[in-house]
Amino acid sequence: MKELIENKEYKNWLVELKTKIKTSQIKAALNVNSELIRLYWEIGKMITEKQKAVSWGSKIIEQTAKDLKAEFVDLDGFSRSNLYAMRNFYLFYNEFITIVHPMGGQLENNKFKDEIVKFNQIVQQVAGQFENKDNLFILTLIPWKHHLTILSKIKNLNEAFFYIKETISNNWSRSILEIHIERDLYQRQGQAVTNFKITLPEYQSDLANEILKDPYNFNFLTLEKNVRELELEKQLVANITQFLLELGKGFAYMGRQFLLKVGTKEYKLDLLFYHVKLKCYIVIELKTKEFEPEFVGKLNFYLSAIDELVKGTTDNSTIGILMCKTKNNLNVEFALKDVNKPIGVSEFTFNELPTQIKSAMPTIEELEQEILKNID
Image (cartoon, rainbow, N blue to C red; front, side, top):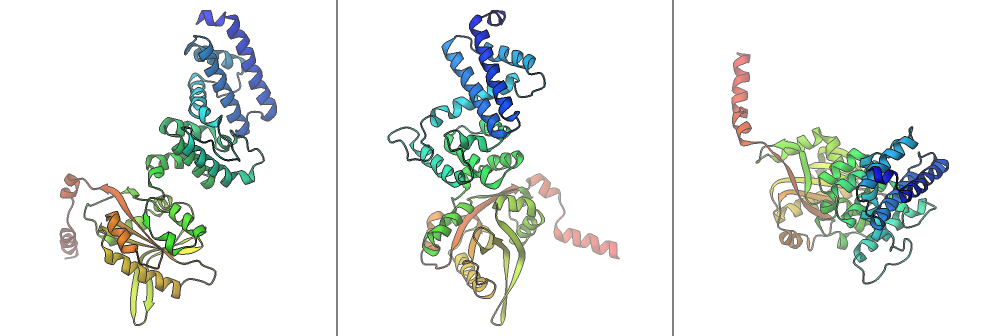
């Protein structure tokens, strides 16, 4: 490392780096996220380019961390690990960012074609509220620690931009972002089998498809393998915060076993929600077994009843979500084919109670007998 300290080229490069940092400090005192992300991008770029130009390898990061810490005593962010992260940040996004036309079309016949399409869609959704629309700006809209989380867990650009967009749209904290990455939201969102395209207007169909997942992840619950539907329903409501987090932004809980009176008969819906973006009621029916076509008929009936008896004049058509333990997609598609109410069908997962624990627990009958003994 000593030869690097005495190296004239390194000294000149370090002066340039320090100047860039000081300029950034003057602009925003390093407390504006946009300027901070841009600074980290530039540092990552400078380190990468210098490593390519001169055979200094990792030594440049080790020594630069020491020199910057000595120069900027009161500033955090220039540790060895963070400098490595800046380099990785630049390397991960660089080739893609440098060829994207942020507000224009896409470049043809290149390996980033799909990513560019998604990038431009994200820009169109969020750019309206920001003046700066250069290629890099989308990366400046989430905090650095969110970027660290994404960089440590995601290796695919489409997936990375998906989580950036969702973080911006939903104002996720870092912990919420981590939960959604761990639950693999990218692979699940919009994957349910639905008939929305033929039962909802296009503007509503796209959003409705986007809010559904398949499978739903209820791993915040630990239940018996053959849990009954009523017990699953109770546990979801008892853990309503986690349940709403899994459902996603916009769901407002209206109640369980929601009573409907149709003619002389009474019916009870498993769960009723209202979605503030879709401006409609959402009925969720739980089935702790494999999908059967008759489930759709019952849910279709419930949707008609809500539309007739509960829905207001300004509300959109009620949507049904059928959550089953397992399903065959082809069977679901056939069952939904001629249904005129909007319905989506998904699977769900939960943590199953280990057999050894289950066997050690008393049955309901045993508990009842014990209670009767105490009463006597």
